[in-house]
Picture 1 (cartoon, helix red, strand yellow):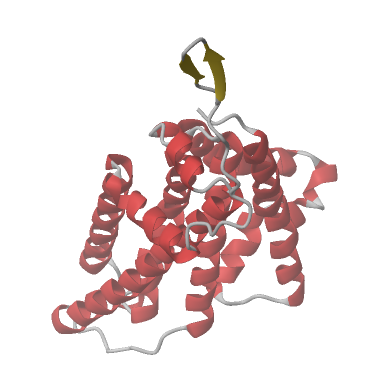
Picture 2: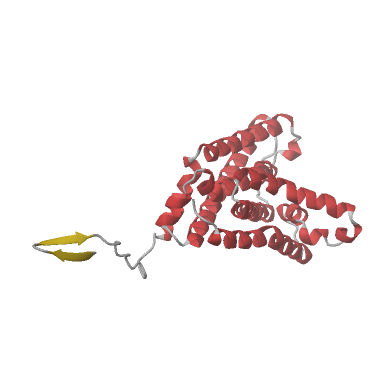
Length: 270
């Protein structure tokens, strides 16, 4: 602000407002960010309907297995595998919707104005999506137990409540990696439709090309997460399979996640 003095009067000319120094100011608590991002999952119609679709498909899958499955397929472990397969297929889409919500809902300007450190927002989204994945797995286990109880009562199936801990742990890790891959693709591409298409098409295309190319066939297991993932959910991992899992997820999860974070840090917020 500047002041000009004339004969018998004082004229005040407004200048630019001072810019406050925010250095060292406390940011939004991370726990609050996680709660906000968790709530965003069900605040959008796409997120709500995706969860409803997952629940409906799990119910249909269990109903079909209970009606037409062989008694040997109605153990607790097998029924949990049925429910977990649905989660592995669709929960990565939830991860994509979680990180692309700012673009699709046009809320990026508000979000990053409240929390300018974008990496903290992404970290909160990762924790929120992982929390929903853990909740989904817990519900899947509960539904598998309920379905096994129904099978014992209605199909004369011997009660077998012994869980395959290695397989269940494999499902949990596979679900987490699948959600992280969805987050990585969503962060890199920013468009929900493009990220969903890339998530389902690119790995399948890679497997197809690798199987047709002799030179790539030898390194295929090192770069294909589905091959080691299948062994992981069976709970039969070896040292070599763990190495395959690590290298393939470095390509399909860690690399797009790192590039996506770099792109986000330089992307213009609208």
